[in-house]
Image (tube, rainbow, N blue to C red; front, side, top):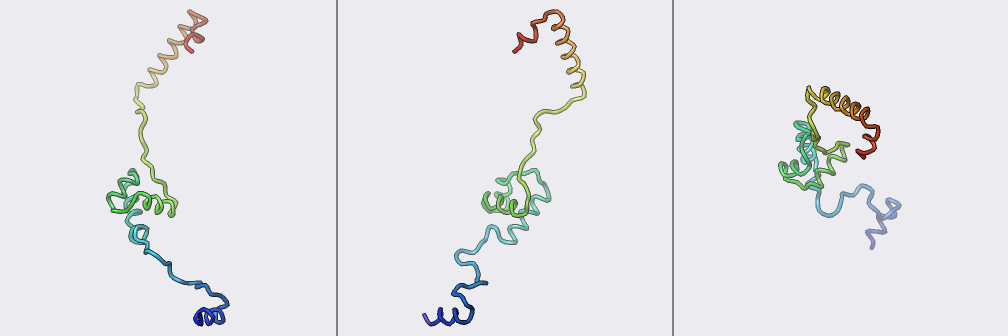
Length: 113
């Protein structure tokens, strides 16, 4: 009790202003882990957090936390469809065919829906 009284008289408070974090030390978001995660994403950004967590050996949520802390995003761009050289020709043929059918039958567009 005397220790708390002395601390209050000295500092004006009982709380430690610059006390180290209590509890279990942070290992997965430590400086070395952060460097490894950022280095991994710098090499190739086309990988998921799950892949990175397996490579480095830390949890997926820790990878997300590190990326969010450094304002990075984790995503894999996927190609939905490829654009081919003949796509423009096929689109033009479709439009011409559609217009031709609309000229033959005025109700054609309404029947599609």
